[in-house]
Image 1 (cartoon, rainbow, N blue to C red):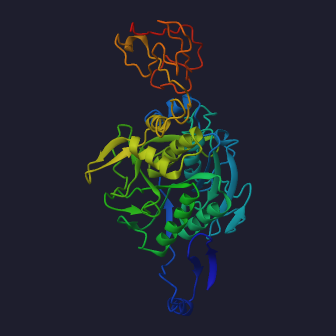
Image 2: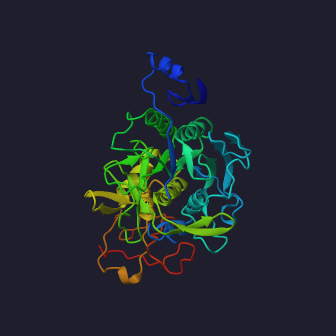
Length: 432
């Protein structure tokens, strides 16, 4: 037996083995399962408006302070749209596709390359700065990316390398909040696939470890047009499986789907960065996955204390419902603004009122005059003589204090900008 990868966070290993070694290994009482080595591959405009990410970005939430690990092909780290946001590089490639024809490399340059568009395109969807004025700004342009090469120049790679990369992230990078895997195994599986291969068993272990440490793994649902099965690692229950829709929110005909699919995101005719300072238009669940990762980064930017379960819950509960006509199932298409707003007003009220993020005594809502009705609903009451709020002793007069909260604007109101000066403030009080 020649060991290739030992894992810190999974009860298994990958290796090359002779027939005699295989027979001896199979006799070991603590061996649960043995599978032949498997390979997988990459899962191959303006889409931010479709999921309202542009509105959230306009509110100053752009993913800054959030680190994402990107497992993919080599990427063009010199692309002007990606400058300053690739913070580390790593390579796991049993076939010898790391620089110098090696199978393992760390440090600058180890995930750099221009032969394949896939990795650069996915990275652009996540963090493109739009510097070349050809590709759109990424969903979370303020986020940082750890680029990890696990696919060769044919966009193919060994599942053992994917496991090794996940294991490395789990053991060495606790700051990573999300992992983007626009990768699919050759085999497709029904729901609850964890026990159906040794690789799936180890994917589950490492993904669970990452989740327990605060990291979500997002995986492409694949492009086989199968309405009943998903590839690994998307089929793993604790991974976030992402399928693709077109601009009209119709499930893409190529997108795999079953009851274990978690989210939908734009994945048809997406223009993003390509090697050598260019752009390309690609379609696939590979393109949908970084959309979902980017929205997760926006939520963590807004509130770093969110748990993986909370982020997943906001993405799933607030998404626009889309039906897959092939199997009759409904899935949420991510909506960044709805998730952001749900996060703000969820949970217990802070002292005296407000939300978890505002911590205000009173929240004020400023609406366009055309939306104001003559009869409004009071959200707080202070009566004359009430010592808890009336700060004078004059009968018939009530003096009270308010705290105006302006850091939670409604992004759907285009003429209400919080960085504009308030020139007029009217307070309407009932005669009673």
